[in-house]
Image 1 (cartoon, rainbow over the protein chains, first blue to last red):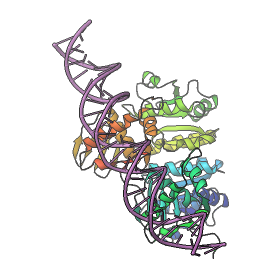
Image 2: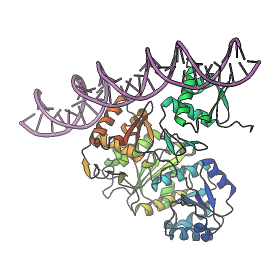
Image 3: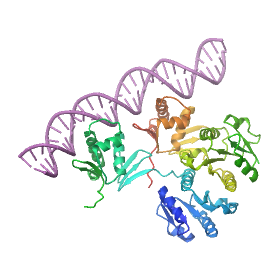
Image 4: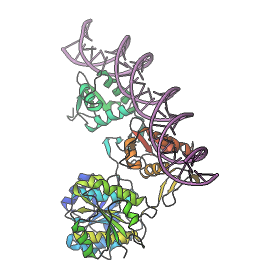
Length: 226
Length: 226
DNA sequence: TCGTCCAGTTCACATAACGTTCACGATGGA
DNA sequence: TCCATCGTGAACGTTATGTGAACTGGACGA
């Protein structure tokens, strides 16, 4: 996901924390000039602008954003309760606003709804490890950009392993965590699925799933660099 | 000014008071049937719906409002903090939301901004994906310029899927989101409708609806956040 | 009132995809 | 070297899904 533009710079810590928690990448700018200067290659995803500290600068930045060649959308304004009156006649400068101090989950919900409204898809939930990506919403997987055609159990197993990189799991643990606690079946089933996963990952990435002899399997590198 | 539609009936006193204070006329309705029955001659100006007391009824009313011949705009949802998660995947049911308990002036500011926004018509009346077009106002569908003759349920299902491209939905989710939460029926109903949709989409576009084995169905390609 | 039509649902069956198991060969540590 | 452990290919049984057709209930007109 492209980063959000944040104002002011430095960003209020509770805002930075809320966005980090919600998994939104961001980049702070100090003034209008910095909007173009520090724009990422793939553009901004939107803007979150604090108007409670420096209202003048905030509204000036909004105006600049709206006047850009590529008007940046959406713009979410953070305002204090006493500033609600300032919004009047400035409707064109923002797409939504949020009262400050804010609840982190309200901010997240507003951003999601804004992205939906403005046509940008919501952020997909991803599991990532190196160049492996699992999209949990679309049930799709890809490595190095190459889509992987996985079956249901293969996907579930890979999802579990990739969610706990570096950790070793016994076959019994995998059976209970991936297949289900009530599952009653042979442990070799895991081996077969691991084999097929390694085959589909390709020779180059087959070593992502390592065998730990007489213990089980581990995904990715060990936490202790050898 | 035309009155706002309020739910539930009776209206929470602090909401009624805030609207009276802001000078917004309003009229409460108890259920979906009352939306049309007690509609003023000049229509509704918008809706403010409390979802914190009776979420089921509130969302049902939202759906009914969106499905009206004259979809009523804008819809402002009042939710409690714990309900923020419920908003996910229901983006299409409301135009803005406000945390409850609310500051009267925040509610007023949101309504004013909403009226300003919807005065320019920002809610999409079209759903588009590649060469598929759904006209939500005329209930018509076309792909590659060719009109599609869809039944009501087929249209609703396709509309829902095409509104969330790439995302996988289980049959149960589809039943609850497209058929309705109160629906009790076999999951195979979804299969049959998907089959007829694929048939009507034509051999060339049948793959727009993909089955994800042991999970459900997915429309279109996934969105890899680049 | 009856019969027809149509959308929606359910059912029964066919089938291909999938998960599991097994036998055997390969591997690696003691 | 020995033996527990793991990889491998193929075979087997199960299950989810596709498919055609029957069923149901309401709308409509004769």
